Length: 332
Image (cartoon, rainbow, N blue to C red):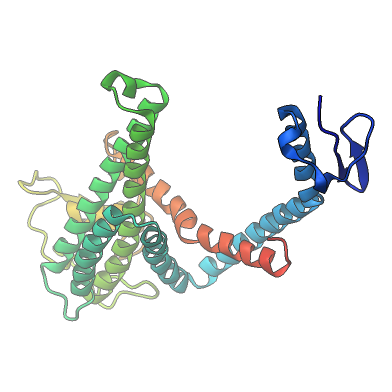
């Protein structure tokens, strides 16, 4: 067997030949066997990555510490200044995915993002006008409830496709696993992202509209007295009695005895993320309101979207901060 060479790893010379010793840099690789070439490359790799274990440990430690500190800061910020926290989170939810998808040339997402932004901007503009048009609350809740249902359906379909792919059901339809998985993950992403973003915009619009109507105030007492025949969410008369069956919608009475259009109070609680009475701020029993088992997944889906806000809005920022710290410390 031809080929005699030596490689220095960790300051120690390793002789991989028989008899003679030559400098590793003068080895003719063409005269080495495949096994000897593999040994040489393996030794070079060890020499190149010498000391990386300690560096990786430092990077993991920095990541853990940064995540803990960031979580504590975000929790304190949310508790002390919820309004500014929600606005910054909403802005990041809206912009951060746009940056990455533009960089990756995901044109399909950019088209849907543009359509969503135009329609939502128009709805938000209508919701923040004073005086508030009598048809605006209905328009706002219809749009965001429609968006909520579309995102819910899209997310369920995407999750189903992913699970079917994992169980190999896609092979029955002769669909490649990678194509089926890409399709399912894309639908899941669209559903969750627009579900989170839509609920945040809906909450902002609900605050503006309710404050403008005058029966709701985020802090303090309402500026108007609520009569039994007026809905505090939209400010419009209630034409159907609580005990009657409505043609279009029913009238709903909360445990505090305040009555609302069923569509309004459902939009207020599910889409607008409010769990208190729009007038007296008494806690709303969602289980009693959504006694139908088929409606409860909507409530659980809304809670899931609230949890995902952190991953979409703040996780990229925290990862970028960790990378910046590693760069300053010379770990990258």
